[in-house]
Length: 413
Length: 87
Image 1 (cartoon, rainbow over the protein chains, first blue to last red):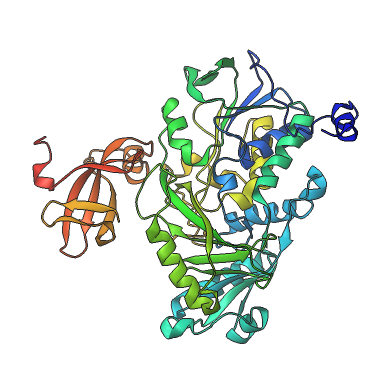
Image 2: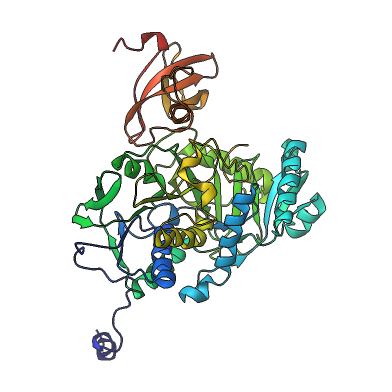
């Protein structure tokens, strides 16, 4: 090694950059234990430390940071949902995303693109109008647009879709954006660590101890931690955690697959979604087309990829953009989606004192990362559900008070 | 291609089948409380493992039960509802 380089390497002024310190051992006691080191768990840890001064917090991650849904989604941020409860929650999240790069001092590549949801039938156009009116009423920038408008914003599209399912119009949501999902988790994690939170990667929760209806401790593969407050933020792994405390939920787990093409020169400046064709596509800042389709049709707890998925997706992509016929796929992967019957999350306190849940994020979790972190931190600090969280409480099911969210992605409706 | 064995038609591609959800015996609607009924309607056993599921063969209209390991995505056994409880 040349001397100049070696001198630099040994200089204490330039230590090895490290985003997350690795604490050697678990402390015997924490005020709050967060299970799951994804975006939601780390955001909650960050807001607990920043807004509520609760710093004796451990985030337990059985794999590595962002290994689950956080690093597997298609990174779309939007708020043009259908229910007032959903719109209020997701719109607050979009607002928080606006200055998150500054807040976390990390470039999240947050890029406002404009989000089109294509309608191929009268029925879906009717739903788009409904959504647009709900959105406008609640102050969200959203409107129904015609074919000319879509063509002007995206000249490459074949609006006739090979004469198979011609596009009739679209719901257009200008604030729709994409962001670099890994960076969101890293940014929240680093900012939480700087405020005293401990992140323990490679730490699996094996049990949760309760006394009566109160949480007392968390058992892990690295020892037992005493705590009186546990937040489960583990998305597709939720049923395993809730079964540890004997809590029943409506969550079922389906894989959701996605893929990217080789990088192309920038051409697609919008996010294009078609529920009828089961496809959503955007172009990342690296030039890859990031694509997803719909949920796998049956329950499996595995992140395997299938050829069926690529075949269906590629076919539909070519209906919208025939000129992509010779573009190669680079990678395909799957994540676990924790689906709920009303396509809304399950958040907040439960009947077990000290056991909180942030789950049911199915195919719509990434965009809610900031708002779920912020409202769950508030809920933990105050011991009662935040106003935005209340409609999504677990007990809504036994009260027959569901939040039918049909604006969710990747679900047939 | 993933295959599933229909008890009537034998091994067929999985695209020919429709998943009908977890097999759950229905409680007596008249005898159950609202909470028990809500539990039956909404709650599911979502944890990974071997469990019984309803499946439907679209081409021939056969509903049947499948023992499915949701952790490994392996089908252990498929059989008609009449054979339930016969091992």
